[in-house]
Amino acid sequence: MAIQACSADKEYHAEEQAKVRKMAKYLGIEEDVVNQIEEICISEAKMREKRIAVMFPEGIPY
Image (cartoon, helix red, strand yellow):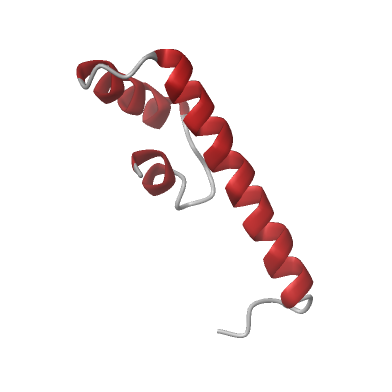
């Protein structure tokens, strides 16, 4: 959820990544797991953008 929150502005800056990794380490989450979660979040965001482009080719109406 932290990665998604940091990416809410459509960017996931190096500073945000460092903070996420620091907290993950504190929680005992291995870096490999964090990498996998980041990949999933990025993939989901790209899929959402594709879905919106198909559903609303002229832009989101709201």
